[in-house]
Figure 1 (cartoon, helix red, strand yellow):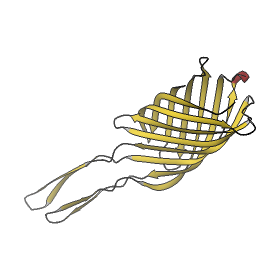
Figure 2 (cartoon, rainbow, N blue to C red; figure 1 turned 90 degrees about the vertical axis):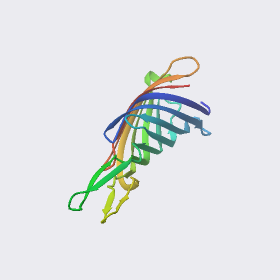
Figure 3 (cartoon, rainbow, N blue to C red; figure 1 turned 180 degrees about the horizontal axis):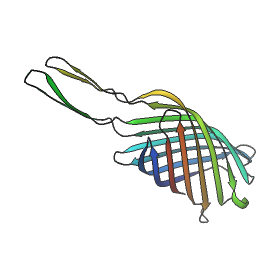
Figure 4 (cartoon, rainbow, N blue to C red; figure 1 turned 90 degrees about the horizontal axis):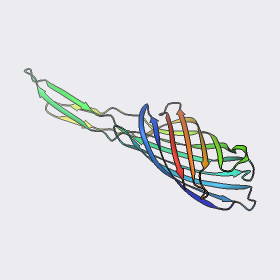
Length: 221
């Protein structure tokens, strides 16, 4: 089959940390054969811009082995990573005044900090050439591993007689949990140049971190 690379673009929707975003993204996939062409490898990377009330972004990477490339059903095993960040660093405002007794009265507002998650682990799946037609493929994979995620922390306000000190503690990747996920894709070659139209979906659920799901339609050339 030989070594080759493909560029893809896609658009869709993403739901992360219970919030909905529109999604536009790009990807690159490179496939190569070992000495025996029935086995090979796959390297891929992708990046997405998440559009909602506030912007976000995500990026992913995969490196793995492919078995049975000359058969109607191929199998894959590899390592994957997925990083997503939404929201913003946050801003705050503190106003204060003194009442008739000289006590300080606070009026305080704070926007929520950003949320981020880094999932990494193993991916195991298969690709089926429908009716043994290389132009129409259905792919499914299971994923699982560790998730680093941020747990929002409250800000500290310390008040003395005439002074207010404000300490902002932004969210960081300060917690570790486990996650499991699955993804599926249907792709079809639409012309003699080998360009593909594809439909994909993905869901990843952590035991304490933020769940993530997405649906997209894309084009590879």
